[in-house]
Image (cartoon, rainbow, N blue to C red):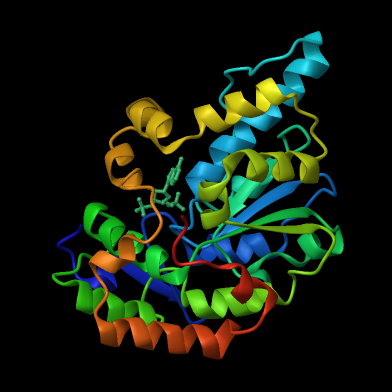
Length: 291
Ligand code: A3P
């Protein structure tokens, strides 16, 4: 949480707010002419949808596949992979990214229309991660209060208002879902939900591996699932994410929203959800609890 006023922490670009410490208009301008490669893989997820979790899964799957190619052995290479956040960093980063070997993996919180055109032209593989908006907002609220680059909130009600009126970084989650919904049927886009990964990680990881064309044995699958469990990731978080680890790996559960939402907020969110994505492919995929 930061004590600095909002307008010193955030800036607006094309009507959407971003944190000044990690994003800049220069980088957004440079991103427009980013050249993708047809074998790039993009992990797309709005903040707090579980992007770090899926990054861990992808890292292990890639390492498994590379270990096989290198020495024909089964197992996981414990290699750190470069996993750039597309829109985060300085404007020179895209030049540096041309030096990364293929396949390049990257993460983004952006809506499709804010992504470089070349990504869609080249039919880059996109793994779209979505999470139910109630748990996502809950996670976002705690994260805002735990992270110095984001505004802090005295009350959950204040955060809820900002979340519903596009006053949080990366804009409206409902618009995000509705815009990505237009791409949900494309062959190069695979949608996965936080809830289904939580409910059945083995099936989730298997589907992701298949989408990426990586073959895994049952044993390797179990290993990836174990290494990406909330408990393992939380335990390792100091090493993998430093001080951020404690804030990032908070609860890792479905339906924590029930501890924060009032009846009125619950109705408001259901209404917005219905309005933007009710009955759509993505809308139908999201669940508010798992058993
Ligand atoms: P909570 O705040 O609800 O706990 P992101 O990585 O996109 O910032 O998302 C963070 C959310 O994903 C946090 O949610 C975090 O706990 C959760 N998360 C991280 N790793 C996870 C894992 N291995 N399993 C389940 N949830 C995980």
